Image (cartoon, rainbow, N blue to C red; front, side, top):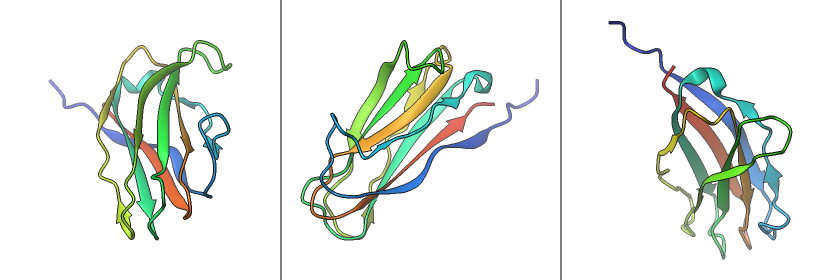
Amino acid sequence: MTAPTRQTVEILAATQMTPGTSEAAPFVVGPWVSVAALNGGQLAAFLTNTSAPGVAGQFIWQGSDKNDGTNIVEIWRGAGNTNANSTSTPVPIDLPREISYVRLVGYGNTLQPVTLRGVLFAKG
């Protein structure tokens, strides 16, 4: 039996979110990234503060079986912290094998910019 090939897939490159956005009007809606051939894995979102935001940056992992904006499901939602000069420790979220496309949506910080980055630790 051979060990599975594991890889890290960049879902959303580090993106600095300016303050003052909301879930209804997010700062970033990442592109749909095909994950169908990766046999699942774990999603991780990193939120980095340089200065302390008034309200932490927030994110939503979304999935779909198509790349056309239909059949969108929420996989997980979370938030960072309000500590200056810190990166929130991500909680690894299992990506179901049934999901073919995934994207990351970011919004919500106030007062200071926050950087959001999302990766998939793929099973291979």
